[in-house]
Length: 366
Image 1: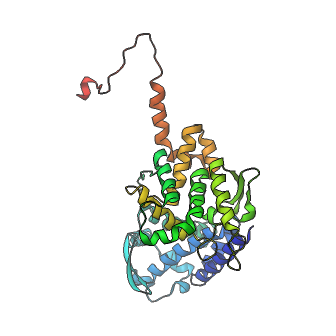
Image 2 (image 1 turned 90 degrees about the vertical axis):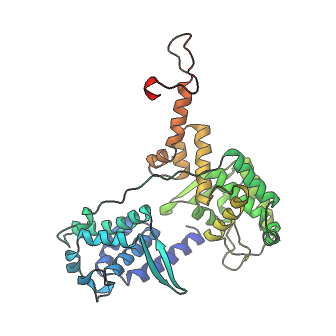
Image 3 (image 1 turned 60 degrees about the vertical axis):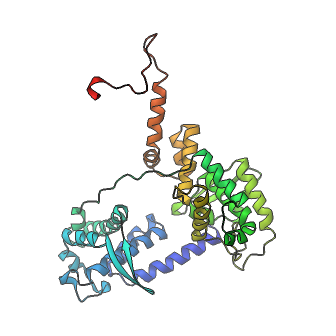
């Protein structure tokens, strides 16, 4: 495990333990049980969601829990909970006001966010019920919010070229943006080239160390979700972008503690996910203003290009790090259908079969 990954693990472990100290005591039993099969980031995410749920229960919205703190809730209180209480919580988090240091802000949770929060509650109650700590599992009676398929946004081949040209040339930038462009151009070209040429996640990109890249084989090591490491290859265009940035990187004296990081910020520290998101957004807004492009959309673009060229859904799943190929298949199902229609054009069952006109329709359709 790299120094960055170790520091990240320590950081989230500390955050997780702070949240756990606010939760009911029985939650510690649950998290101890799932520890061997989950990452600290997963446990942290579940702890955040459960804290939100228990804060709602004790906020006064549900009278029988009013006046208690989340820490004071007991297993006997969970026996009093009903599926209607959980449904009320899901309705509440659709849109609510949250106190911040600057006042209040509106928080909105879409169907996917609510489904994820319900998953955390279900997991806890499933454990408590399985261990006979509660007699009924009311969370199992709550329906999962209906998830609507989202349109997959990706860049076309010409848009990929336009994006990289924008980074290299700095066209369309404001005066303020141009001040920093010369100082960050090689780094930004390398970052976007790596996204588009390998399909890695933003968390994987920021975690790359100098020693992780082997230019003799054009490959590098990434730490996937869950902590597993994988070696990925990159092509000559990506190699050129990385090498050009590396020459510049050698002239920079990193901030103490960030010596191993491959990608550095203007402050000479390891670049953060937020900084990467902002630079992708900045260039994409210039080159493709009608599309909301994020690092994840660049990952989708890579997956699309790889599937179009290879036609191998298992290869795409493996390189993208999907544990289940059905996840990959769902994202690229539309492309499969397009290929199916394309294949149908080549098949003729009889000689001299007439071609259907473009606007062909049956009488029943007219």
